[in-house]
Image (tube, rainbow, N blue to C red; front, side):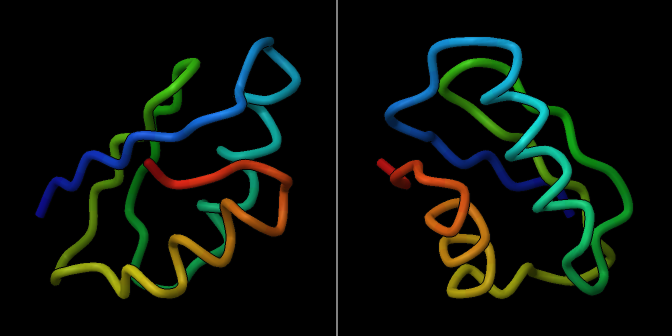
Length: 64
């Protein structure tokens, strides 16, 4: 299943790498593609959006 999450507060490659690393640690995540302002997450089942939001916020960004 592919899920797109819009993210506020990202402005550089460091932001992209921090969010990508955090999302890849989540259970059931098969792949992650992060660009400034957006993350596309591939999972086998619907992702736990609370965990996704928490992982992004822990890096200092907000889910739009």
